[in-house]
Image (cartoon, rainbow, N blue to C red; front, side):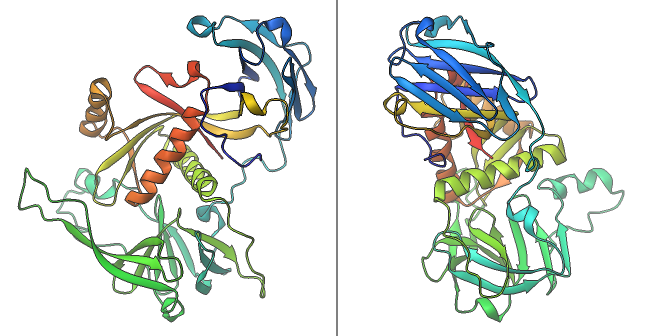
Length: 389
């Protein structure tokens, strides 16, 4: 149960957010679970936190190296939410865990002179057999072509030229990898030319772009594009990459929503650290803005338990990114002004994903928002969500 997002509910029973850097945390208990602060008793120790209420006792497993400081939990004002929620502040002790800083994302997995197999994340069909790369190189970030003129004293030497991999190259983009196509995927991949985006009514000369979509032959999931006749562009949200070890088959694929959540969270965290940016603009391959994301905290540990589950579950609190977001298409007047400001001032670092994946990601984020206490769902004109790492 620890890996499943809590069901959509307006009756949050217990919510916990711990901040590793601050070594403190916020505990929220719904009034349907406990009416008075005296009804809530918090205890725990190394890697566990117990919350006893009239509804029952909830035991939360904390990440390795995190422990609750006994006697540190005190009630705090709940403000406008006092009729629905009880708020508490607490202290934690934080030590370094053995797996801290590790990642199982595709970008962190690939190494030169190792043998890998690529699988469809949807059905775990093996797509590419025993790939060995002599070079694994990062591509320039998403804005590189737009700023070449700022750095060159002569005409752009890269204009209208694509950076393509050689036969034994693997090129890493922000949200995709580029590989040379070989005969091993002729039976596992299908290709279909399809339009991306709509014709611009303001500029009829701006034709709809057509791309060659690459899909899994077994389940028809779109995996990426053929950016050149012999080059595959595979999105990291669509494939699983594992070292090829004998005849070992990969474990069953993760729940799709959880895989997408963890993959995107790992990339946002990596990009934030490497580019020193906290603003991301999720957009479709035709450049249309879909979602604004403002990475607020990267050191959060959170758990959200519906009131109906308080007495019969022992969930785990997980590392998560706390973020603010605005869906571009459903924005209200104030939010549309923010969206326009981000686009005009190029505030967000672009993260390109297929339209269907953008929609899936928004659903994951919306589900996270719905699982939060009412007092935690909004911050000014932004909505709040967590992505588990």
